[in-house]
Length: 255
Ligand code: PGA
Image 1: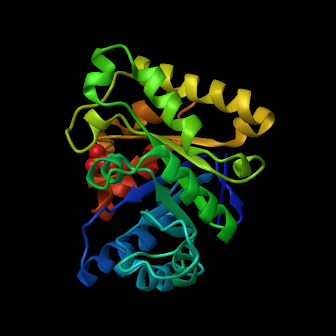
Image 2: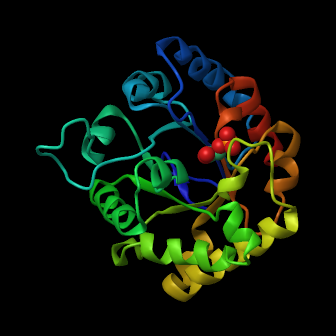
């Protein structure tokens, strides 16, 4: 299920540090690397720190099984875009993956799926793996719109160029992010199955090797249960990825 550092992985545990982490937090990267020996075989590990730490984290993670990713990129390769970073710059700094269309980007920066799609194209052009996030709000779920919203975001965020390419999808219900709330396993199973079906319609066989991660309040205590749900191929972990011990405990749960 997907690849990390050229190795095929059946489960991907990706940490999203968001806007957290000074240089001192590189000690957590070192601690994760020190614990990689206990991560079950076939489980890929990725940490997406803030952009300021990518190069230093990637240097530490070089020649280890830990991948380093980014949390966003610009659609263009270079140019007059003050404050932005291109996919090529992130790759040059050592990133292998880029999270795109996270709900916090969609809400904080008004990012729409059309923009996410162009970011996915920029990422693929550069040879990085996009982690494309989709998810419904609490109101969407209460109004019975979960599938419509999630599948609509998915369809509009994926470019035609994604066919045959290594991509990762993350289903993150907005109401579960950072709240301690999680959907039931039946709710997770239903959305993941719907995403798989939509990917099959669009990409046929490729759909079965595309990792679909679950994200939203995943932690050591609930990881084993969530990761055992059909069509859940890993996790996108926010808060619980900031501490090496918690991140490694989630990886250990992915047996
Ligand atoms: P959380 O964040 O694990 O802190 O809920 C997940 C995410 O937003 O990727």
